Structures are given as structure tokens and as C-alpha cells.
Length: 243
Image (cartoon, rainbow, N blue to C red; front, side, top):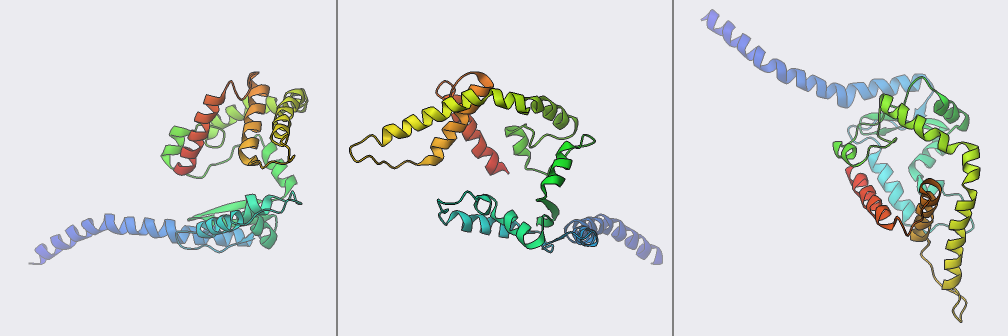
């Protein structure tokens, strides 16, 4: 009888061990580890929002974005940060230029100090560790924003020369031509007897951006690459949905 009970206990223990292990791992990832990281950041003097189980600050990020986009932006200001990045702008105002928020169970460091940003971008010893993504992102986009390790370093090294000051100066004639085409188009819209017209500038500036890229990078223009830019726009929508 005792032997039978011992065997039953051993069998039950073996059966429960994987379950208990999985429970421990889950609790560690969704609770203990985030709390531990939050304490470490607080000890370093980094303020920010407190960890919230599972969701972090995702709800607040969505809410602030929807609220910012629901209001028209004053025409007399160029201060776009509260509209483009409302959550992060508010975080910097409340907690300083070095603070932390939470993406689900992961702490996210917000850096608003220009000198510190420069030092980070100039660092050649390592690379940025990206936030884990939906695997679909890697199928749709393999750019510098999603690459890791040596692939990221090599891609960044290839891109850097294109943004040297001398190269940017050489792009000015092409940029000026794109801007002139945009302005001429707007003049035609207001050439009616009333001398006024209404323009949705969002798509106009999207076309301006793609026209500048086509002229400076490929020696072409928006009209010649229109189909390609349209496909890229559709791809961007798919990538955002995958994110």
C-alpha cells in the first residue's frame, strides 16, 4: 500500500512539475520582472509611470492620440509635438527629459535630451535592441527600423553618407524644383475669378515628399514613380496593421 502511494505521489509530482514551472515563468514575466526593473529604474532617479499589469500604458497612448487628432491644430503655431506625439510630449513635461513608460510588460525609456540623443546615435560600439514585433512586420518591412545586429550596423553605414552636409546641399536644386511645382499647382487652384480655393494639404505634402525623394535619390520624379509610391503606401498600411 505504501509503495503504491509513493508511486502515485511521484507520478503526480512529475505531472505537476511542468505546470508549476509554466505558472512560475508566466508570473515572472508578467509581474516579478517588470516590478524588479521598475525598482532598478527608480534607484537610478528615472521617473515615469508605474507598471500596470499586462497592458502598461498602451491604453493611455491610444487615448491621448485619439484626443489630439480630434482637435484642429492652431494655424499660427509650428509646435506640432503635442499633436504628433501627445503621450510622449506629456511624459517629458511631467517627468523630465529622461523618463520611462510601459509597453505591456516592457519598460520604454523616453529620451528628450538632445545632447544625450546625439551621444547615443554617435555610439559605434553597439546597436539598438528593437521591441519584439509581430512576425508579419519582418515579412513586410526589412528596413533600418526593424533590422538587428550586424545587419542594422551595415544598413546604417550604407545610409550615413547620403546625409552628409555636402550631399544635402547638393540636393537643394531638386528640392527647390519640387517646391516650385507644388506652389504653381496651388496658384492654378486659386486662379478662378474669386481668387480663392480650398486645398487638402495632407496628400499634397505626401506627393511633395515622394517627389523630392524621387528627384534626389533616383533622378526621377513623382509622376514617373507614381505606381511604385502607391504600392509603398499600401505596404505602409499593412505594416502599421501588423505592428
